Length: 68
Image (cartoon, rainbow, N blue to C red; front, side, top):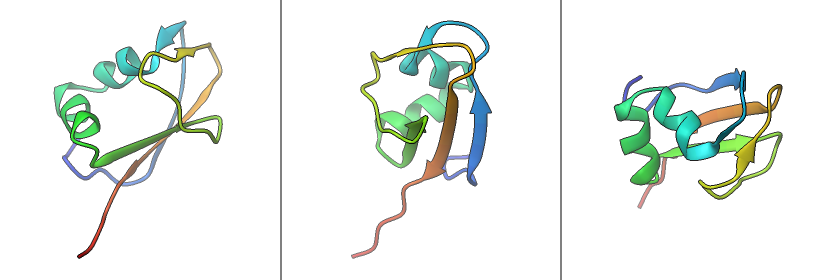
């Protein structure tokens, strides 16, 4: 996964936290998430990194691009 990934949809396979799920995508994804250049929505909602995810939850990962 690059620092600015394209829109990606994944589904949760096993119970986990949002942060653990992002970590499973790779260290680059976790780094980007921590730097807030990677946005994540679970079932259409933004959640805390400690939120518990259930099997079947839909996770949308998208780049956060801002201008100035």
